Image (cartoon, rainbow, N blue to C red; front, side):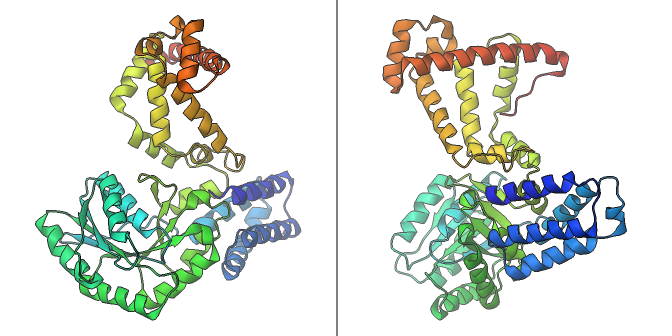
Length: 439
């Protein structure tokens, strides 16, 4: 996410820090480069111009030019303006005073509305909310069945009404949610390949009938300014309350994220970061600005870890590490926790200093994790607990079972042995302070 943008910003900052003293001239040069980076990232021209003007106005002040660390001062100004551009602060979901809260999801066909509905239901479930997904898209073939599957994957209730109209389905779903004791209704409305009068009239009728607490516009983040233009047209006709950007894991530029709040005046509330039902993040402008500028996002990384780590297992693992009893079974458990947290490339981008340095083909390393998993699963429980018993014949059997080679088995066992020794030393050094792992 934003790899190109992050890499370009890091290059600009490197040059900026290289200046012993800043002048109006080299600040102007920096701003020209920033403008070029934003436009190449498909940021709206007007938004880029206003951003540069705001940064220049603060950067040429005497406090910056006479500062001991002028380069860092300018970077801080860029960060602050980027946070403002992205919305300033988190925009929480609105809730009804009397349940259920009604969330209407709108957008063009293919933007990822139905998938987002499932992700949102899963997100709310993790926060002790009970949601019902309503199949109001009666235009697209198999849309109702797709939402049924998504509901099951998210652990949410499902509601549909065969041989009815979208308006009637949405209207009756609220009463059905109250009867089932649910606190949230998510309306999955129909989309079109383009905006037309029929679509907007249908959505307006649903809005009037259900009085939703939230209307979330779902946009494909990879379409850049097309997503922004569509959002602008939707807000003029429907006046939605928030934006969801999907497919952000495939967006290396970031033009939509940097433009949409300024153009529409509506906050970004969520971003989709993958295909899995858990791949949804609450949008935090300050965290996203930090990621874009290559400063990492430790807070989100820790949140992901806390959501996917079994604390009882973590305590048991700490005890094993202190006793030098870390087995391949333990390693496999840690691998599963890591996979739940999301793609490896996204996790690495949250670590400060690594933002723009992750290769585009880092996914190849994730395939390596799959190979390791296959090797461990091809071992017997005894071999996982006591790897030292794995002799030549056992290695051959494991290689055949996992579709790998004996050389790959040897490499894994060697890496495991090195890691076990390293963790044993770390456990000894931590002593009474305790040893905590991120995964």
